[in-house]
Image 1 (cartoon, rainbow, N blue to C red):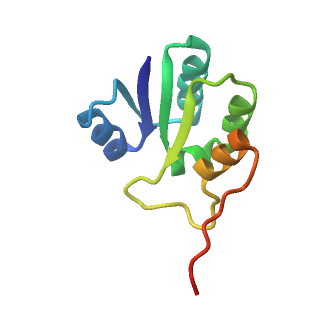
Image 2 (cartoon, rainbow, N blue to C red):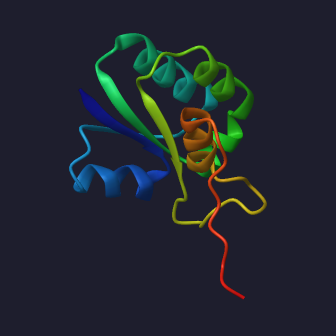
Length: 110
């Protein structure tokens, strides 16, 4: 199974240099959605790393893809060179909450 990355130029190139099987530079929402749909339907992609800014630009369609898919591919949203999207919930935390069925939160000591 493969790992793929979709994001800006630095995001895609960085993951490509890190050994990710395939990386795509986001240029257009329609092309990115076509790639994501192919990944979900192909069955040979295990993990999709997507930059938060790209994910936000296609949020509605991305949520539809995530809701209707099986276990794979796991879609992980990561900050890119611009940094994290402000005011956004951590999607990885949401995935864990959905998989485990409970909210696990660490409290800081006062």
